[in-house]
Length: 299
Figure 1 (cartoon, rainbow, N blue to C red):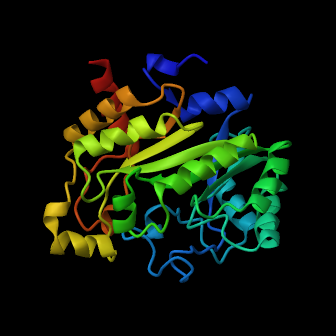
Figure 2 (cartoon, rainbow, N blue to C red; figure 1 turned 30 degrees about the vertical axis):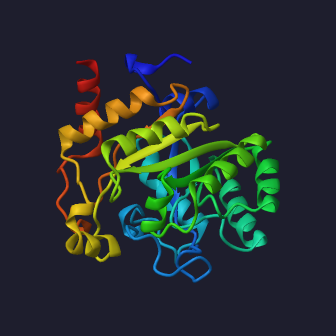
């Protein structure tokens, strides 16, 4: 697959072009799931950085059915691209955590909605039982399926500090199990978690490069209001290093140099709403960041 626009990496759009002969758009779904890190199964209160408001669009509200959210999301995009098809993106919290029958009901409700071409399912590496993998393998024979695992860090001390409730080894095993079923696999990492030096962050690239991943999402650490991590920042500021814009761009470039070039990079950055940030962000939209990032790569 040729890289578009002469970028020295492959982005998620490149990947989608290898799969679909038409344009596709993700529609975020909040299907009302919770998380084993919130309901007491693994812990209480969730990950220390977590506030789901930061990544749930306004149309994705869990009191609405999957179909209603798809309807509203598609309406939002369809005026610009009337012939586009859509991927139902089960995004908020842990979207494989629940009774098997309930999970499948929601997945098939999405797949049966007009112009939905497949599923992207965000989850934790400790929430993928074999019986669900059996069903996802069946679905993937007829529909596009990508499972996106929140790995966050390859350092177990960091994972414990942020209250993830799983180890990196569990993530490796689950990614391998998913790949063996012929299901596309993605991973998510946060760059700049407390206690992690620049060298430790770059080592993440070395470690995950050996995994059978299709795609990778990266983003900088952001401190969100009313989270335990925001409180920790006030109590122990020496544990934190919040990257300035140019510094983070340089970090991502060095990360990319060490990363498996076969991975498709879905994003390098995420910008939460300023109203939710405990510490002010860079004041850039994602496309503005990417323009600066690609310009620096060219230079």
